[in-house]
Image 1 (cartoon, rainbow, N blue to C red):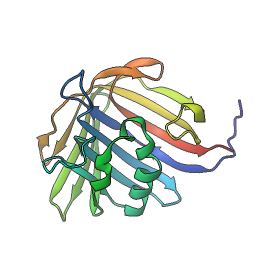
Image 2: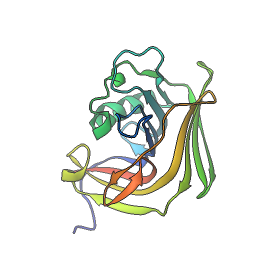
Image 3: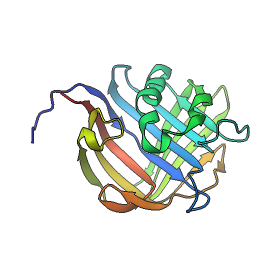
Image 4: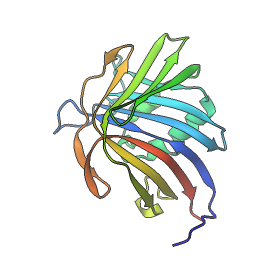
Length: 203
């Protein structure tokens, strides 16, 4: 195995997620992710994306927002990466998601009991909290292109699955819970921190 990669690093940072269902046997009812990008062609930046009822195009009651402090970076991440992630490929709600580009971000952590990523928009007076509880031991992965979501990159990351999680919008919890599923080489909840995540083009 090569110890030095010569392919271009498209981005590196953190990309934790919370995927929830109201019925464990049903479809996903909300998909939420957070990006903290340390380096990319679009600079540094953060974004929190929340999609309720992600597989229905029209739903006026659903939250479909991207809060960010770097709009160009956020649009790039959605177009070139998130839309290729397995659970988002049929998420037609990405088409009418609202981008809000005046967000400020805050991290709170009582490790390993709880980890919170928050975003606040002044213009919308909106606060979104992503909350992970009971973090399990971290494990590292190095995935070849054939096993990554884009099929064009190697991906390196450290994951920590949570035992429970929730998403709050203006203090109100979104319905649903993470579920246990097959995740890489183990069973884990569909909510996890993803740290030191790097996407490297095939060289």
